[in-house]
Image (tube, rainbow, N blue to C red; front, side, top):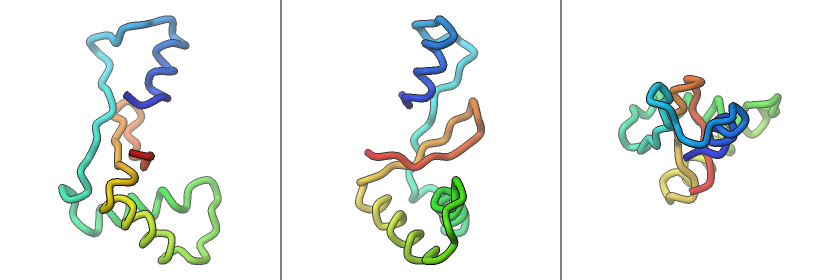
Length: 87
Protein backbone atom coordinates (compact mmCIF):
# COMPACT_ATOMS: atom_id res chain seq x y z
CA UNK A 1 0.00 0.00 0.00
CA UNK A 2 1.33 3.44 -0.88
CA UNK A 3 2.42 5.54 2.06
CA UNK A 4 0.32 8.57 1.08
CA UNK A 5 -2.79 6.39 0.81
CA UNK A 6 -2.18 4.93 4.26
CA UNK A 7 -1.48 8.39 5.65
CA UNK A 8 -4.82 9.67 4.35
CA UNK A 9 -6.62 6.81 6.11
CA UNK A 10 -4.83 7.51 9.39
CA UNK A 11 -5.46 11.25 9.09
CA UNK A 12 -9.14 10.55 8.55
CA UNK A 13 -9.17 8.50 11.76
CA UNK A 14 -9.64 5.17 10.02
CA UNK A 15 -7.44 2.18 10.60
CA UNK A 16 -9.04 -0.22 8.14
CA UNK A 17 -9.85 0.61 4.52
CA UNK A 18 -13.53 1.06 3.83
CA UNK A 19 -15.31 -0.73 1.03
CA UNK A 20 -15.42 2.40 -1.14
CA UNK A 21 -11.66 3.01 -1.06
CA UNK A 22 -9.68 1.76 -4.01
CA UNK A 23 -6.05 0.90 -3.29
CA UNK A 24 -3.24 1.91 -5.66
CA UNK A 25 -2.50 -0.53 -8.46
CA UNK A 26 0.98 -1.53 -9.63
CA UNK A 27 1.19 -1.36 -13.42
CA UNK A 28 3.70 -3.47 -15.30
CA UNK A 29 5.34 -1.16 -17.88
CA UNK A 30 5.09 -3.95 -20.46
CA UNK A 31 1.29 -3.61 -20.37
CA UNK A 32 1.44 -0.05 -21.70
CA UNK A 33 2.02 1.12 -25.24
CA UNK A 34 5.44 2.72 -25.67
CA UNK A 35 3.92 6.17 -26.26
CA UNK A 36 1.77 6.00 -23.12
CA UNK A 37 4.70 4.85 -20.98
CA UNK A 38 6.90 7.63 -22.33
CA UNK A 39 4.21 10.21 -21.54
CA UNK A 40 3.98 8.97 -17.95
CA UNK A 41 7.76 9.04 -17.55
CA UNK A 42 7.97 12.54 -19.08
CA UNK A 43 5.30 13.82 -16.71
CA UNK A 44 7.17 12.27 -13.79
CA UNK A 45 10.59 13.71 -14.63
CA UNK A 46 9.19 17.19 -15.33
CA UNK A 47 7.13 17.35 -12.13
CA UNK A 48 7.63 20.21 -9.70
CA UNK A 49 9.27 22.52 -12.20
CA UNK A 50 12.11 20.24 -13.22
CA UNK A 51 14.08 21.80 -16.04
CA UNK A 52 13.59 20.38 -19.52
CA UNK A 53 17.32 20.35 -20.25
CA UNK A 54 18.46 16.77 -20.49
CA UNK A 55 14.87 15.49 -20.80
CA UNK A 56 15.86 12.62 -23.10
CA UNK A 57 18.55 11.48 -20.68
CA UNK A 58 16.19 11.62 -17.69
CA UNK A 59 13.47 9.71 -19.57
CA UNK A 60 15.97 7.05 -20.65
CA UNK A 61 17.29 6.68 -17.08
CA UNK A 62 13.82 6.24 -15.57
CA UNK A 63 12.83 3.84 -18.36
CA UNK A 64 15.93 1.73 -17.65
CA UNK A 65 15.18 1.73 -13.91
CA UNK A 66 11.64 0.50 -14.65
CA UNK A 67 12.97 -2.29 -16.88
CA UNK A 68 15.49 -3.32 -14.20
CA UNK A 69 12.80 -3.40 -11.52
CA UNK A 70 14.57 -0.78 -9.41
CA UNK A 71 11.45 1.42 -9.54
CA UNK A 72 7.78 0.58 -10.12
CA UNK A 73 4.86 2.33 -11.76
CA UNK A 74 1.74 2.76 -9.61
CA UNK A 75 -1.69 4.18 -10.43
CA UNK A 76 -3.73 5.74 -7.64
CA UNK A 77 -7.45 5.55 -8.53
CA UNK A 78 -8.29 7.92 -5.66
CA UNK A 79 -6.34 10.76 -7.32
CA UNK A 80 -6.22 9.39 -10.89
CA UNK A 81 -2.46 9.85 -10.96
CA UNK A 82 0.55 7.70 -11.78
CA UNK A 83 3.67 7.64 -9.68
CA UNK A 84 7.07 6.02 -10.04
CA UNK A 85 8.47 4.80 -6.74
CA UNK A 86 11.32 2.66 -5.46
CA UNK A 87 10.62 -1.07 -5.70
